[in-house]
Length: 180
Image 1 (cartoon, rainbow, N blue to C red):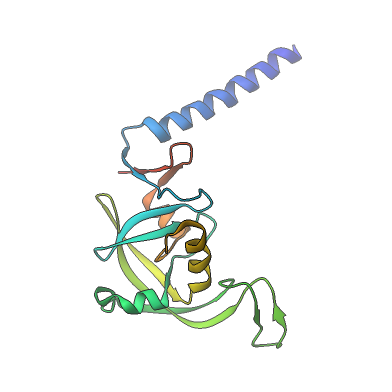
Image 2 (cartoon, helix red, strand yellow):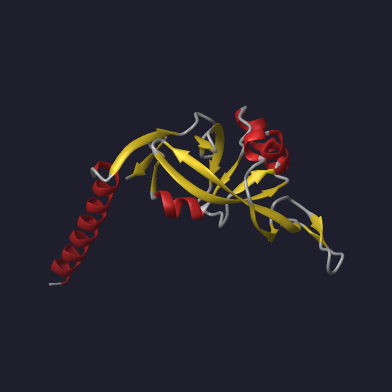
C-alpha cells in the first residue's frame, strides 16, 4: 500500500512538472526566442533595445530593480529626453563603502542616495515594455563583466521586467522564450 501511495505521488509530481515544462517551451503562447549572448555562461546577457538603441543588458532574476549605468546613460542623446519619474536610495551596487550614518566600512555594498529613476521603452523582439530604471554608477560591475566576457552591458533588467515580459530562460539552449 505504501508503494502505491509513493507511486501516485511521484506520478503527480512528474506529470505536473512535465506539463509545466511543455507549456513553457512548446506552448503557442511563446511567440519566439531571443538568443543570449555567447559569453562565459556566468552572466545572462541579452541584446535588446532601449528607446530604439541596440544595447546589451544583464538579465538578473534576483534583482528587484532595473539599472542603467549613469555614464553610459549620459552619453546617449536619445535617452536624455527620458523623464525622471522619481528618485530612490539603494544598497548593494559596489563591493564596499562607508556608511553615511555611522561612518562604518560596509563590505556588502554601497549606500547611495537621491538616485534618479527614469522611464524608458524596452523592446524585446516585437514586444515593447515601459520600464523604470535607476540611473547609478555601475562601472565596477560593467568592468568585471567586460573583463570576463568582452561585452560591456548597458544595464541590468531585474524582476520588474521579468514580471511584465513573462520570460522563460532556457539555459540548455542559451535562449530566452518570450511570451505573447
